[in-house]
Length: 500
Ligand code: NAI
Image (cartoon, rainbow, N blue to C red; front, side, top):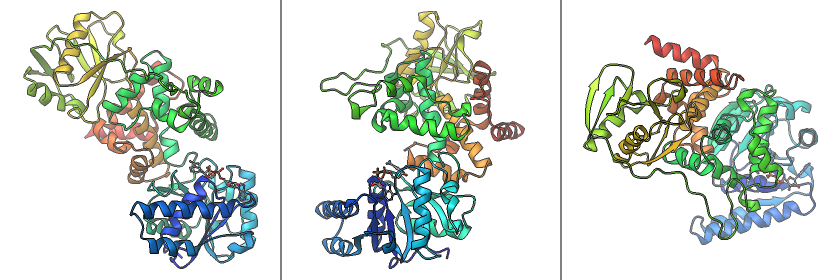
């Protein structure tokens, strides 16, 4: 019962829209006979034709043998009635995202199929436990959360509801694995892994913008070129659709009883209200009409590099900068003290730590966290309002001498990459401790599901739990809503790190 479902066994897909067609194609190409059912008359037959056309394109591109395509077509059928799904070993549901409708469907399905048929939902935002609520045998019910487009994206979240049997979860996991996907296991929580943990990637960027720290194009450029993310949150949500992205945020926030860790963005709300939904409506954060100019990120003009700097103490995650500075021909002196770079004029350059520059008597310029300082194409700096141009000039010149573009943002605590990463780490640690998923599965899910350059726990290894916790503590002082209060698990890990 806990092995993958045999390839000779039928897989049924109910709901043959975008996701249903994709999932059906995956099961079909894996070798199963596949039956499709949709409540809209003729929709299942249309899906059979659409999947056939997609397989034709694979043959044209040389990605599938013509004989395999013919064999697959022979295994794919539309069903007129749920009763025709009777011999299915697995039924995957991908119908409208409505709890009541899904519950009713599964109550009907349970009467049509055998007691050992594995039942799965592709829901992205509803509780798997709730959908199974009316089943006679809820132990065989799992979530199989595929990502769009299912034939291309490898990640599948295998979700255990409260009543799901371990054998059913394992069987679903093994089946998806045999289909060539990368399954991860997770508990039934709002947003599962990816949609839960990814929230701050969008929210922190929107907050920095809302607070006047930087404009959207600049925030995107910093997360991409300094943080190593493939796309920035503004351009990414324009692609996803502001309405779709906001709906996920609101659903996760509501499901967590409006926990401030997940509070949606007012600026994004305004976009949705005004119909600026992103690429699909021709305008979102950025304009997409013919000939519309895409705003450029803020980039500083060339400044003179200092001839020497002092490295004070240990720079921690930014230690690689020392070698880069030396390679650039800038003389480096070392001294003891709290980790920072000291510029010839006496100003100190600190890695973003959640504090602001204005609170100091001496000149402090912050630089943002990079995934890899050698590879980063851009570094963000922040300083207090009214800082002397010579001070900023030395800092800008230093990073420009390392071949980086430099962007100066407002005096926002935690800057952009550092605060985003600290929040991702916090949510990931909390999810691990609550048994949502293992650290390894969370990193895999975030790398594959949203293309992160490193999973949150890999980022944690780079940044350190203590630095992440301290940064969030500082933010919590500044914004005492509870959003930034480090979770207990992060505080515990930070403490353990200090003890070592
Ligand atoms: P869709 O609107 O493209 O397709 C839904 C299909 O279900 C339609 O063909 C509709 O006629 C059919 N349907 C509705 N009620 C039915 C019922 N009672 N019985 C049988 N068929 C019924 O929707 P889409 O985007 O494919 O989403 C389906 C499910 O997958 C939803 O639960 C959604 O949350 C989830 N999902 C969607 C993703 C996406 O990117 N679109 C990604 C991951 C999950």
